[in-house]
Image 1 (cartoon, one colour):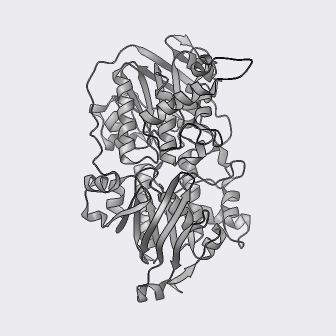
Image 2: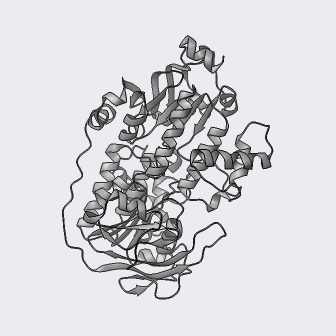
Length: 512
């Protein structure tokens, strides 16, 4: 059925009735019904683990429902796999990206399209689509050289090139800058005006209110409400989603203490041709202070974080110090021994090993936990590991089937809570965290931010790298901006403005 005919007949583009999906120990979707009309931007809202992503994967054919009915343009369908979904006009941008890291951008997009264009033609299509929608990306770059924000652009471009009639977006703006979000919204509104129906998952309530024309709320796998977002407030949407309003973020003004970690004129050549050279980067992390780093993805944040965490130990002597100790050439373990803990932006693959249990994932960064184990003929006492993991699960309200649950079995937001909690639980003296609330619901985001501020109040030095300006303005005591591998002067947050930060994101600051 054509888009025009569907619009004229006012037939639902997608109708879900009684969708049910159960896993051992949990019901992800419990009799969910949803109606998506042509040209509608429909939000699916719910806290982490509410069943949103499972429902979207059922529509896309990557998960099979146990019961229920799916209709596309008033025709009952059984979607057995993503290829069948694409044949029905369904495209999806996943929260956790489905990209081959050793392949180029063009190769990834080409593999995701139906047979037709050649690889060379696909490169041209990427350039044209990226330019048209303001999602610039080099089609020749290997995916493993991209930042998370750049990977998200690849996923979005690949979905748009499929010319879908139903577009599913799972946390599409989680690592995009405000400027990129504005451009994406222009794209989505244009697609909707052309008849494309959009299912939009986001925890950013102001985005849902600004963009979406309808909203279905899930809680515990069930539909608990349907509303028009423009007629709601952030607080009322929070109540529908989590049953209450998130607690206000409490901050207290305090004097920063001694310098814990310092970077002095760090110059570091890119490790590959697609990276960014670090140019005379200097910063000071002080006890009892949050230093925020703002900037558009791909401007050197990834290179800086690797130099600070010890993943890239190529810095020249005397450029990276912890408590005055030169750690420029030290690896991650040596830096952790001095009290540095780090949360990377990539949850799966760097923050956690997907098939390992949550308890076993503690071994990645918690040497002190390993050292406290009772070694018995080469065996680790896993009981103590499980106890530690369960403590983190309870403290950070992680929805998981205990400490033995595999990391990949958790929703994105719940895995984020566990990873952040794992490092906070280590009681670091120096804490570096990148994108701490990526894909996390409003309640969990408030909890993570409060925990980070509590660490700061207790004297920890915190470096917060985020592409969420609101988050930086809420939490940072001082702010620096990264652009083209350089770092701006530090600015007290009380003196910072969104306009100035936006200007500095283009590298336009004075060094005088």
